Image 1: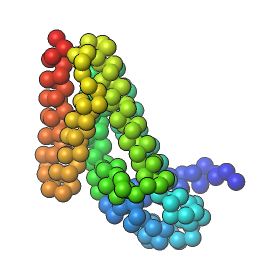
Image 2 (image 1 turned 60 degrees about the horizontal axis):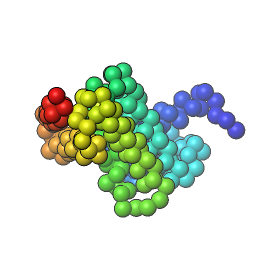
Image 3 (image 1 turned 30 degrees about the vertical axis):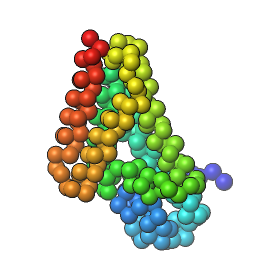
Image 4 (image 1 turned 180 degrees about the vertical axis):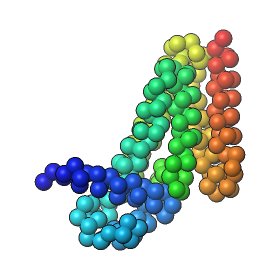
Amino acid sequence: MPMTRRGDQHRREILERATHLASVEGLEGVTMGRLAAALGISKGGVQALFGTKQDLQLAIVAAAVDMFRQRVLTPAEQAAEGLPRLRALFEAWIDYLDFFEGGCFFSAAALEFDGRPGPVRDAILDAARTAYDAAAGQVRLACRLGELPPGTDPEQLVFELHGSVLAANHARQLLHRADAFDRARRAVRDRLDRAARTAR
């Protein structure tokens, strides 16, 4: 039976809380009971919406993907394609690190599931590939537009830029560095500026 609009909204609200909880306590920590307690609702109510723990985990990952799309991919699409969009993508990506209570949801989830084959790991992997592919596609386009040198290795450049994002999340969450995001923005800007200069 399809859910009502109110039911859909209720499910979205539960999943939003669940993603924040998972960023702090891990996907494995978000049990039906833990989520119900955090929301002040019955465990049976959560179970009726999600069924199994794995179904809940997959729904949480899917919700986090939607949040990433809304907060990173979609805003970046407002910039011109190529180098401007690549810059906008990583600016938004760094801003997004501050959205979840426990830092980047996908960084935490990847560490938790990278060595555990199964549907949840596959969903996390698909999300990572989507983000990587979006960035690499803009690098390739920037090369065709003459904004970056034709010999630029898209995978290497994205690897380096994403490394700055991961370092920012680590520095903010573990080291409590207030300047973590500013340093990441500077690292991304400087790396792209150096790459762009070689195209002139």
